[in-house]
Image (tube, rainbow, N blue to C red; front, side):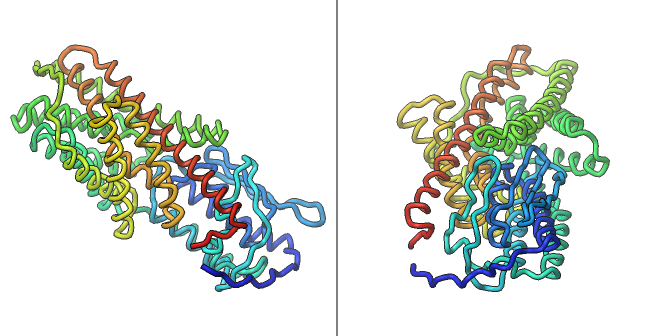
Length: 469
């Protein structure tokens, strides 16, 4: 696709006040992206791309955990800097993250296309966009954005940071996700309904406690305990048998784990951002501790009621084509649960199908063990989700999460572990297997994303900064 030459950039140096206004805009954007699910490295690369469009080509970006710092050296040797922290790292909102970027791009220009400098990050990452004419469309020359425009954009970014996906939409998406994941286990329709009911209860407890702002570990402990107690009640009422209840509990507890943090921790480690990686690992650890507390309560309650649980060596298997259908539906449900809307339905379904197909082929055709099949399918997912993210503007982390929850969640090991614990045995081996699968999934997605990013940068540099179509 041919492109016209860009107009010449305004060479007038920016004043200190103009630089600060742009840095404050970038900082608001950075906080919002971190709060919407992007990793530190992804955020700094995105900010470097916008810095070029704003005439801050040599700005420095540092992101560690929730902290973000941006500096710009002026021609007179002085430095202007902005430092602050994001509110949280464990939230996902793909619609908000895309809206944040769109606001920044509107503030940058009025339709002209230029290339202004080359942003850099302290972690050594290359700026995303890489001179891609399509990515730079709509940005103007350095210094062209006026102060009122920047101020209005900052206000809009702050407003977006204060918004979130409607609670009912998140709860509906999570309920659908629990239902479709439990369907892949193939026990009974009562187990599927029980899983959905437990998720509704868990979401309600989470929203209720959210207004009180308790520690995260306490919220998850209460949610997992409430789910376990409700599943026990359903068994006592003869609505579902103990096996079906174990399936419902396993799905609920898996969805309480912050899986985006697992992926983000591995991604941060690959990017050598060990502080952010440790922060995310700590978040996962606190969630696991909360689930452990809820599990201890549930198992104690079952023993007090004298509940008997059968031992199973295998589960009814579903035909591969039904697994693919449920993988696509689960990915779509996850899209809505993480702030997605109608435009995200088809990408989510495609990611669920691709991930499920790779996993099923490795398991059924080649006989690959579950751990390695999940890890390789996650690697493919990382590659595909990176390319889709570049085309759609949605965060790669969120797109990858859709494929994981649709097709790769280690529900069966967790289910067997719960059943063993309820039956008086030990499920530690099954839980350890599930943890290994989660780690393999996170590593596979991070590695796939890294390899896809290398390929995209090589392609961009090989074509002189322009991607032809």
